[in-house]
Every structure is written in C-alpha cells, then in structure tokens.
Length: 215
Length: 255
Image 1 (cartoon, one colour):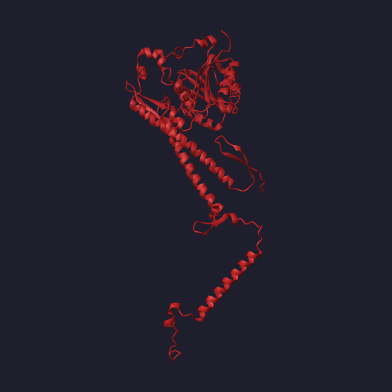
Image 2: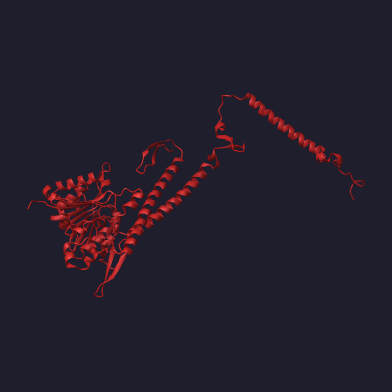
C-alpha cells in the first residue's frame, strides 16, 4: 500500500483512508492512502519509476491539477519547506482545489490556462520539478513553454501521457515515442519512461531533465 | 285465491319405451335446434362460396404464420403478437434498470477493493482466462549513446541489488541495504498468509472488473435495442470498440 504522511492530520481530502501510527517517542503520525488507480503519479511510483524528483523541500509546478487529489499527496511529500504551484484551467475542479489549498499552506492554486504561462508568471518563482497531467494534443508544447519560463537549469519534468488524447489513430507506443522526440527538440533530455499497466491502459509517465545549455 | 281453480296440467314426459332417446323434445327445444342448424348451414354456405371464389394466386401472411401443432390443432405462430410494443418496451427498460444497478454495485465494490489493494500480483494466467490482453508494464531507460546502451547495467543504474530488479515496488537502494535497517526486512519473503490474502483480493478484482465490463456491454446493447424500437429511418453505421452495431437515424425536422 502506498501512503503519504498527512500534513494536516485528522483530515481526508477526497474521502481516502487515513492510517495512524504510534511513533517510538510516543507521538502519533498519520498517513493517507494514495490510490494508484486514481492517481497517475502513484501508479508510476508503484510501477517502479527510479526517481520522481518530488522530494521534501522541492518546489513543484503541477500542471493539470484538477480537483487536487494528487496535488494533496504531492503537498504531503514536499512538506512545509516545499511549494506546489497547482495550475488548473476549469473552474469547477478549480473550486475544490482552492478549498483544499486553504488547509495546506504549501499549495498555491492558480486557475489559469497553462497554454499562457505569462498570465501567471508573477505568481511563480523558479521550480525544481514540473509535473504535468494535462491530456491535451499539444501537451508537449504546453510543458516546454512552462519549462522555459519556470524550470531551473537541470530541473526535471515528470509528465503523464494519455495516448488516446494525443492521437487515437496510432498505437500507444508510437505516440509515446513522438512525444519524447518533441520534448528532446525542446531541450529536455528524457531519462526514463514507464507504462502504467495495470492501473491505466495506454498511459505512460516520462521523466526528463531540462538542459537549456551545454555545460 | 288464483284464477286457476281447475286441475293442474302436468308436462308430458318421455314415454318409458323411448327413454333411450333422452328428454322429450318440446317446441321451445325444437326452435333452438332449428335456429342453430340454420345458422351453421348459412355459415357453411358462405365458406363454400368463399372457397369457390378464391383466387389461387393470392397470398395471405396466415399461410406462413399459422400451422398445426403436434395434436393437429390450429395455432398462429407469430409469438411477438402476444405483447404489444409498449409492454415489451417496459419489460426491456425494467431489465435495463436491473443491469445498470448491478453494474453500479460492482463498480463500487471494485473501487473499494482497488483502494485497499494497490499492488497487483503477476497473475497473468487468471487475466488471460478472463479475456484480458493486459500487457505488462514496460520500463524504458534512456541513455546517451549506443555504447552506453551496450554497457547498461540495470542494477547499477537503479542502485539496487540485482536480485531485486524484478520488483517494481519496495525496491531498496544499495545504501538502504547496507545500512541494514528496517528496509532489509523488505528483502525477506512475503508471509504465506499475506500472499494468499493478496491473491484472493487480486482474483476478486479481476473478476469484478470483467463483470463490470460485460455488464457495461449488455447495458449498451439494451440501449441500442430500445432506440431501435422507436420509429424513423435508420441505418447501420458500423461497429463500436466493443464490437456492437451502431446505428444512425435520419434527422427528421420536428414541427
């Protein structure tokens, strides 16, 4: 079972189970269950990704935050030292996202189109990692635009690709290969790729490193 | 006192000698019998008339829809006529309601099971019998050039023990292994009881997923059938991803 340490003990975000554990010192630590069938990032972790680069203290730009279910777990991971900028375009899930961010001070919700990063540039500093789950045909462009604006040199991107959303006429592996190629052209060096079976069908997570110039 | 003060007239009975012929027939009885006889004769006459005037080339649906059963009784074989269309529609929608309910119930149970069982076992055999073509997940590592690809060492890349490479989850790094803390516990075999429990859960997940899949298909087919019961010109438009026929209705302007 995959769990994250709950930053706000005593509260579930989307009805997930919570597990309380006693520490040897006598305190209590609470964990929230992270369901890989609902979160692609969780599916990637259980699928065996080497590094997700989201770690305590990291600054993360999260594109396609939706209602913030996965975002809440990312916020658990980065902890109070880290920051999550959660970008979501739709207002309805955005409302849930904002409500969730009220309890979690390390999340900055941004209700804006990720296609126009300049609209929210004043809200975001440089980030260590970009996680994207946007499921748009032009997602490679969206991600690289955001990377050029906000990702620090040698920072990482972790993107989830849904083959059907990009091109439903060719097989998934071809779509993944094309996306990787597109990222390469935009100074992102792919590191690893993993398909998300059995949690999702025709989905993949690609991890890459942003290398804007030769050292 | 009544008007009839004279003697009572008793009704004449059948003489004993003619008792084998039944009750004695009175005028009232004769009239009924004669009327019935004439009616039957008239009916026979019309039938003979119709048979004489019959066009031997004419076709009636009853010719092919009716017949006789094993005992020689005349039966109409068009069973669809037993219920009218609205009644049939009602029956079908009630069935569909039940199918939908079952599907939702199974989906809910599946969701709950999946929330508790995160790590699927490699129970490929069971998946195959259920008609799933679940390909195993594929992990690709990108390296700089062909030389690096040729000399790629997975254990070194993932910084773990070679015996743990088959694991996608709970794969401790070399540092964690050498520290010898709780992480090494992860190296040990999974207890048998736990393994069994996981396998049972896993099997139920696969079965329920399969059931939800089938129920969704049946539900869809029923919806198509319901739509086909409506009026209007329609045409087969091909097959959907589940192999069911899809139809397209001709758009009709509603006034």
